[in-house]
Figure: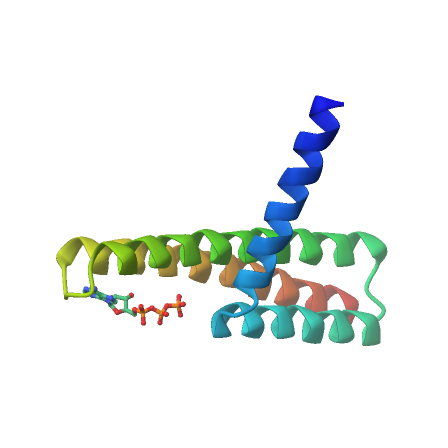
Length: 116
Ligand SMILES: Nc1ncnc2c1ncn2[C@@H]1O[C@H](COP(=O)(O)OP(=O)(O)OP(=O)(O)O)[C@@H](O)[C@H]1O
């Protein structure tokens, strides 16, 4: 019973995190990018396996965006001034998201190449 309640509470907190993430313009753009890719994958007759792969890559990218947002929230709480640690922390988070988007883009170029 204790474990079930713990899991339910964790799901509740995760949903709150998802709602918070959707307030970020970058996260909205990434979600739209994924939906657009799904349409393209559908139109070119991609396999179930290819749709699963792009979905996993999107979920990795979206989770990187969530962690990047968490870093930004913490940094903004720590300082409202210009600071070297703040610049480095935000740039590193930004680079992580960039890597995720690059994975999605490269895989999609490959999927278009083998399906058309
Ligand atoms: N307090 C700060 N001190 C120094 N540089 C900062 C600071 N805050 C932001 N920056 C620099 O400005 C960039 C953009 O920061 P900002 O807070 O606007 O992120 P963002 O545009 O909201 O990021 P994202 O698009 O990933 O949500 C950072 O990557 C960093 O280089």
